[in-house]
Structure formats: structure tokens, C-alpha cells
Image (cartoon, rainbow, N blue to C red; front, side, top):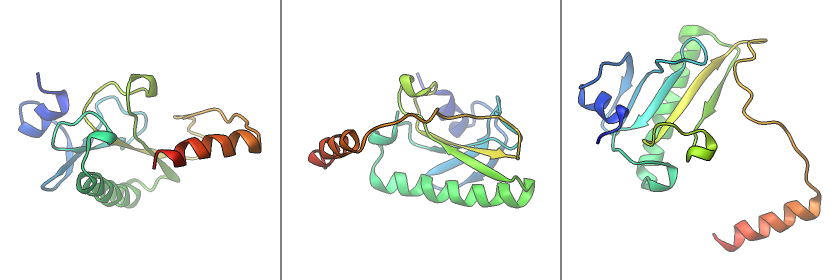
Length: 135
């Protein structure tokens, strides 16, 4: 069965669309974290970042920047978050690649993506070595 986002792309489900090009679509989130919360999706139904071709990643990044500029001009937030979740453990609920643009205003306390932890320099270097070995 097609994802809710694929049904929006096909027109089967209505959405408040703000931007569209050949590879991407951007529309307002129906459960917004803040006024102007917008989703930018890859039109092709792919589950996560690792499933996209580099050209698709670039297309979504370009569309995200275009839409973020428009949100800033229109709503004049003090800042914005770009959030992209991969997998249920990361909070992904719709398994169709998408990016959230969440406008932020001073003191809004809308989103706290993580709590800073700590790591020693040795731990950081060991993790870096593991990642580098896979590149």
C-alpha cells in the first residue's frame, strides 16, 4: 500500500502544498510542531536517506533550502530546525523519506532534539576510527 505521502503526491489526499518540482514536493504538516511546520519529500516512495540516490538527496536538499528561505521571509521566525528521522528508533513514523522544516521563535520550547551527553577524547577517536573504516 502506498504511503500517505505517495497518496498526497498522486492527489488522492489533499495537502496545503507550498512547493513542487519534478522530484520533490513540500506541504504543511497536518500536526505541526510550530506555525509553518513544513515537510519536504522525495516524490519517489523510498523509506530513508540511505535508500535515495545522491541526485535525489541533492534535490530534496535544494527544495528544503528554497522552502526554508520562503518560510523565513513569510513568517519571520527567529530561526528554524531541519529534522530528518531514519527508522522508528529515531522517531520516523512515515516510512517515506522526508525532511521537516520547523520555524522557531525565541522561548517557544517546541522542540528539544537531544540532551547533550559527554564523551572522552579517546572514545571520540575510537568511534571516528570505526566510521572511517566504513568509508
